[in-house]
Amino acid sequence: MSIVFEKPKALTDAQLHYCPGCTHGIIHRLVAECLEELGVTGKTIGVAPVGCSVFAYNYFNCDMIQAAHGRAPAVATGVKRALPDHVVFTYQGDGDLAAIGTAETVHSAARGENITVIFVNNAIYGMTGGQMAPTSLPGQVTQTSPYGRDVEKVGYPLRVCELLSNVDGAGYLERVAVNNVKNIKNAKKAIMKGFKNQIEGKGFSLIEVLSTCPTNWGMTPERALQWVDEAMIPYYPLGVYKDKYADKEGE
Amino acid sequence: MAEKVLMKGNEALAEAAIMAGCRHYLGYPITPQTEVAAYMAKRMPQIDGVFLQAESEIAAINMVIGVASTGKRVMTSSSSPGIALKSEGLSYLAGCNLPALVVNVQRGGPGLGGIQPSQSDYFQATKSAGHGDFRMLVLAPASVQEMVDMTITGFELADKYRMTSMILADGTMGQMMEPVVLDTKEIKTFDKPWAANGTDGKRPHNIINSLCLEAKELEEWNIERYKMYSEIEENEVRYEEYMMEDAEICIVAFGVAARVSRNAIQAARAKGIKVGMIRPITLWPFPKKPLLAAADKVKAFVSVELSMGQMIEDVELAIRCKKPVLLANRVGGIIPSPEEVLAKIEEADKMGGNN
Image (cartoon, rainbow over all chains, first blue to last red; front, side, top):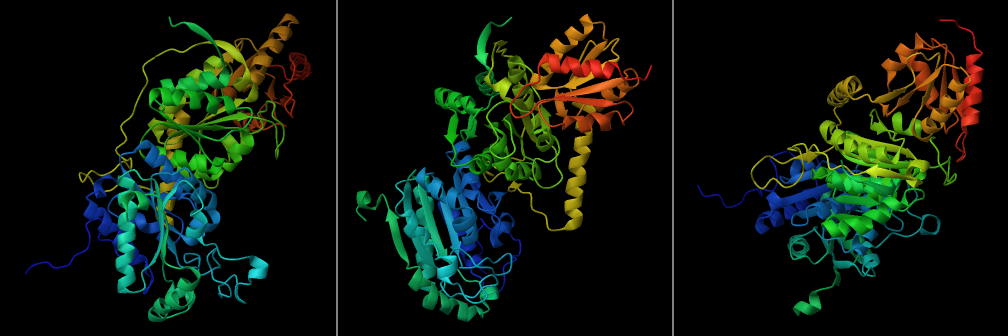
């Protein structure tokens, strides 16, 4: 019997701990497929900080570092500066990257740090049980915004790709989603480009992936996928926000 | 014998780090340790090393974690308020069993405090550098030469035990100039099979991690680490005795306080007071045994510190309160004068307790 489909070798056999319907699993797979297709798993170091994906070290087959909340880009900077010929990626959630780690995010982009950042934006704190995130939408009900996010009182969500598009050092910024097959295919392309950029020395790449959190959104997995289309994408439009090298390549 | 050169403490320390094989320095400016960063900014590019000015102390210590994870020698330096910001990272370094050298050229506090010398981060360095149960090797230089020697020792011990070595200097050590020998002695290096530097497809993946949600397993991790700490307390205590042979009073002092105390001891001896000194070189592990042994011989101790009295608690514990311990101290950036220390010695001398 011939094998027609299997798990990428860049993933371990460990069972994922993610909730049913959560799209972290899809994003893990896309990252692993890219590492494998590029043949770089053996020279890759991944950094996963505090958040739902903190256990990523159990799932990716490359060397892994677990980082403090928000600090993954700084840790990755240290790794990349020590091992410039290796591939270094971070895998961060929205609370991590856009709240507690905002300084590390902005400054690693400003330095044009030659790393690939996978930014998983599901508009909520998952690991701690569903609190308001820096990317929670206006009006969104969470444990710490039980009456809905009131932008007059707690401010507006951060649009990370738009914010970083003004940072000279940032090389490539794209927002994708994984809520349907078409979007998943585009996400794969973007993640692949983020890794290729690093291998080619093109500096800081960040791929923002709109993801679901059915458990903390209080939705079925199917409804959560729809909510990405109905609520998230209108606030966080998909697309390329910056591609420093696109013109030179004639893309 | 290598040639003596005149160097500032901070710069000598930086050069010593390079001698020890450190090619990665990540830091953030703060007085009175900025010369370390400035020196590294100049030197590292000349030797294909990495100098990076981070956006914050927090970022700097996390960059240190990144480099340390790859198995390469790495350091950062700061001063008191900056070290406080690094405390999260210090805890992660311990939790991940990573080696690193962290330098604290202390200034007066709390808060923003001042920029003049202090030893008031003793508690922080020896007892509570961050959350959780852990220790750092804490080395306290009392000369520019010791800034050099302890930097090298610090790197070696960090690698040997996979933990953080801290150089706990005071502003004086960082700022003063003295002749030093930059001896190219043989530097010890250690294999790091645990490093996250790419599997190359030849081994299972290495994981650098401090997370453990299984209580029993996390307890085991802590117990294992403390077994190693016991071994360090047994084998790595460093201290210096000065005129202790016939001493009836024992001064305990480190760093600049030990230098002032030497002058005070000489003045006291001239007056016929038999006083000596035990100078802790490692503040952790603390030289408990020699102090306890001294407690049977002397009638009193004097802890000389640039703090409101922090090390004095360890002295009292080490001697199990067998003898009185007086405190000679100044704070806020002021160094106690030999006369002030002498006055405290004379006060101790008047205390009873014939041996």
